[in-house]
Amino acid sequence: MTGSALRGRLSRSFRGLALGLAAAMAVAAPVQAGDGFELLRHNMVEQQVRQRGVTQPEVLAAMEQVPRHLFVPESLRPEAYTDQPLVLGQGRTVYQPYVVALMTQLLDLKHGDKVLEVGTGSGYHAAVLSRIAREVYSIEIVEPVANQASKRLSVLGYHNVEVRWGDGYRGWPDKAPFDAILLSAAPPQIPRPLLDQLKVGGKMVAPVGGFFQDLLVITKTADGLEKRTVIPVRLSPMKGKAQDGSK
Image 1 (cartoon, rainbow, N blue to C red):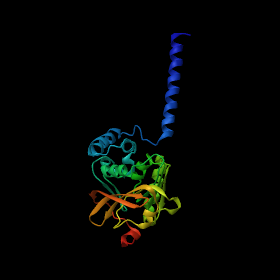
Image 2: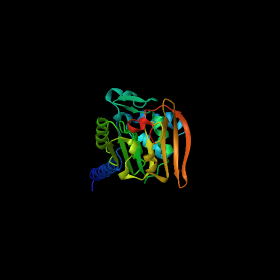
Image 3: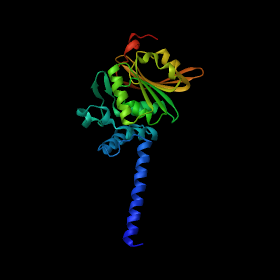
Image 4: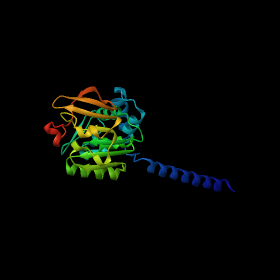
């Protein structure tokens, strides 16, 4: 075999190997490689998240994988990786990256976990959760917002997230119990049905209060509930039945 023929065969072999690896990576996770925002996303994780004490490798990886700019309108994409919440309208807010990462870390998720999220919004936090947990069920009280988030998550390849339109006060009994529950909106007090749907040993992370709120971690034990206050926060109020303060 001539040198040129050997080089041609080796070139074809390497091209085939590269294509195979690329296809495998595409199936493995809906990561937006080459989207032009990789450096901004990396800097966001390093400067806004890791340096503030969020260090769980799974959380850092999820924050770096999920394309935050695709969960906001095109006009806001230049601000997608800045250290601030973004108000999207229709009751939707994409929280500050640090807040998303902190709440996710506090859930202490395992890869086999089933998670309930109350307050889907744009779907960004559900996407982050889905990179760690096995299944994510998210409830959104505004129907058009729920429909948009469901479509967006499906198009982007987050197929282990299911979105439902409804009042999150009652949770999702058909899918309970959950290993973890995240409230992306703040009730005056935790709805009892949500606590009932949390597994023993599971954790709930929730902002609780009115104008002044505390971010709580609630762990369900065989003997009851253990509550820990993390930081004061100011997040969107939980709408629906939770607004009347009912237990």
